[in-house]
Length: 212
Image (cartoon, rainbow, N blue to C red; front, side, top):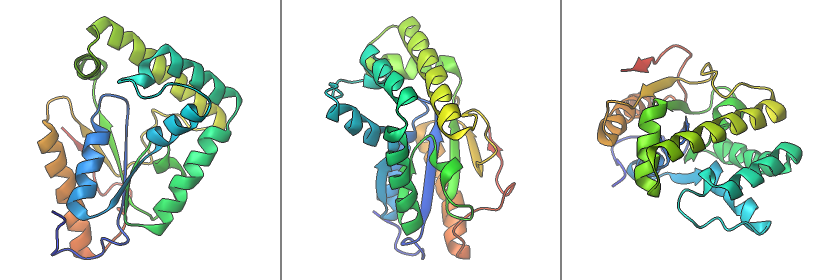
């Protein structure tokens, strides 16, 4: 149930970023449900773009598949896929009342809008989560994630000029290796609710730190 005692939900913006296997999609949906916000995913929007080109995107773990790698090559050459999705996400962020699950939004959204969160997990932990989710071996997961991380970093460097692994835009960085999903969720809720009680819509740089 959305929290009824807190004000300002209509303008609240939560930006969730993190590499594959950090739990950002699950967390984003839970935050949206708790606070009565819309949930949108940049990754899902890009998959729709891929489907329009004839890719079969419905399989579990599609982003780690060879077919997805082919689509990423297209994105390297034709930036309109990413730009169209990111322009849409920026518009939603400016409107407010949304949780945005995206690798780029914390870099691109106007300063002063939203709480920007990066979820961290080590390669081994991420691979274990993806292997369990997709029913593949740990080695396959490690290799697929390494390829995807490097290709995604190259795409955003080429389109926007930023380094995906530069965490300077983020207000809150949480290492999820040794935390349950519920613990991560509770930590973020504590920050969000403190913001809402104070009637603020963004966090000043340095106001939040890395959670162990």
